[in-house]
Amino acid sequence: MNAIRRGLGSGLVQAFLVVVGLVWLTPLAGLFLSSLRSAQDTAKGGWWTALATPGQLSFDNYSALLKNAGITQAFWNTVLISVPATTLVVVIAALAGYAFAWLDFPLREPLFLLVVALLVVPVQIGLLPVAKLFGTLGLFGTIPGVVLFHVAYGLPFAVFLLRNYFADIPKEMLEAARMDGGSEWRIFTRLVLPVGRPAIASLAIFQFLWVWNDMLVALLFADSSSQPLTVELQSQIRQFGSNIDVLAPGAFLSLIVPVVVFFAFQRHFVQGVMAGSVK
View (tube, rainbow, N blue to C red):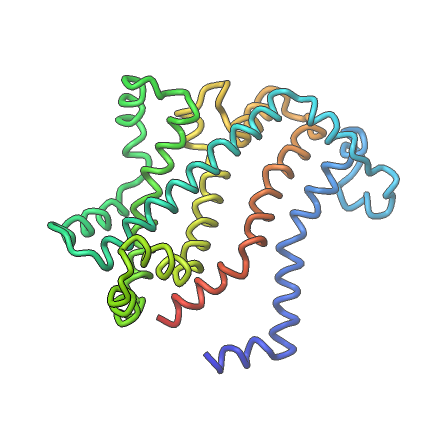
């Protein structure tokens, strides 16, 4: 680890990382500049021409976007899908991960092996059977139906990840807490969750990004009133094709939210990755 830190601290490596960061940010900057240009300006040249003529940039497209009922409704649908799907997966996986790691109950190992086996099941296999089931239950085409699908298919990996992380917590810490009279719930909330915060934050980021950017599940399980932003933007492209003044700000809005979430939890995410690499 010390050798890695020394390598990352060298000037050449830092310069390389800066170049990689600039290359990674270029599409984001291009999309943002395109979202600030009119359709006429976009037809005349690429987004980089705005650097020479900044007077063509304005927030008129975003004003029009806020008046687009389909886009705004799809944005809130995306929030109503992503937040519950992420929260439920994290909460349920944390509870199950602690149980599989430190609680003794019948069939614990076979049940955990079953969870691991579910990791190899492709999402596409469950689309049709779950769609029929949701149709019977009245959940097809609704936001709760989309949320439940994401929760069901996100839980196997989440339980596997948190169980392995919690299992590396020193046993002496838990035994000392039990000797002090701590209940399992108190140990879980006061000891395990704070120690597992990096892994939980990493899981939350991955789950949120997957659900926010999903289009396959939403195309099948969401109707016109519950479809998220990805499906609405795809529909706009199919209907209008060249309406870049609507698509560019909509795409940037869809992109910037996951970027903000990632950077907000970046410190915890890095801690989780480094801790996993050390263990």
